[in-house]
Length: 531
Image 1: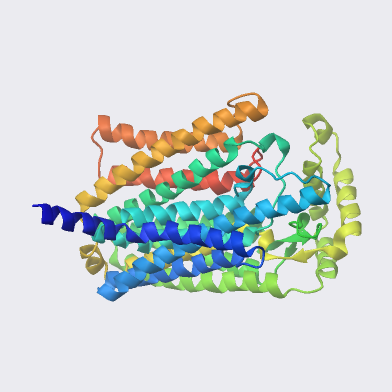
Image 2: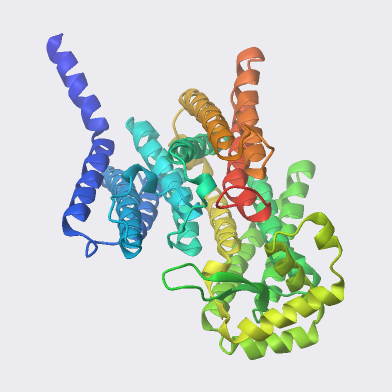
């Protein structure tokens, strides 16, 4: 009996070995960074290595689903572990970098005191949060994948973690100076809880998608929702200009001080052919939605066959349009003369730019309302005259738009993968009972984490702003996401909802988490440093 217990303990330890090695290795990297100094590998290099490992791990786990191989499964698992290791190393090395930067600033000002190291935990902006979010998703995947039948999770969670790191890459890794009102020891506690909670919510979402696939949800129905999301992304970027003017306008930057992030300019530049390509893609995706709706509700096999063919064409169109957007941003020259020509053809953009300039001046409602359209136009022309020749295009000026287009592309790719040998794929997924149980456990953890997020946020807000709650956009988004997971648990406990009903709740909950993490930060004003 003792021998059996010893074997079981050894097997348990081995199953958690990847996660244990992640922490041991990352803190070893931290020690080396402290020992070697600034000449050590940068946090950005570690982040890119993590991104590559996440993609590699996902590819091998997907390969294992369709062509089972012990080697592919092991490579996938250890690639995932390596990705989490690089991810955590990047965050820890960034912490030291922020500390070193502050020491340089203090010595330059004549202050020789050592700053409090806890203060510089990297949770100052959306780049820092994205690093921690991806790590939360990665480490949660490793911990839940200690059971061999749950290693399939990595095929679904790692691409999402890779997308988060891709967004971080576009955002830029510049250090920022926090406003004094946000400089509190509650910041790393609050944001740390947020990143881990978001990571667990991501795993819960992946489990829900796997459950729906295992439960024989029609791939065509998934394609409808994926195509609606992709269409919405295209329809909303660049303020609807893609479908109203067949134009995609990329953001512009103006250089700032050395080592600091450039300022976002109030003007946007038309990228040739990008708007037309995106509009065609949007029409194709809309055609996919219509065809699959007819297939599902009319049981029309011809419509289903047509929809599947159209989905492949739409996927190709997404690749082409994304390539045109990125290529245009990377290669467009003579920014200032081109912008002047476009403004001459569309002078109404001066007013839009002037309104953006006025927004940055933090005017009250009465002062803003008193500004006439002619004054908005004059403000924009003055700005253009002073900064026009300094403007430049960059992917970092459009982080959310580019990342959303990539996410839409990946969503379509996964639908195509699900549609290939679907029954064979379903057979290799874990049982419905085990998936439902894991979904419930991860939803409980996400609920508890988001509750702690709200509590720590309220304490921090009371300390910084003198009130625990003010319906700030970020606060409200977090509350709605938490209430969704509360509804998940309530319906399950009191109503006995399980399976698909719970999976739909988990999907909606994660979408709200993403909106809180990203949508609120860029679309709505708020008091948070990255809102």
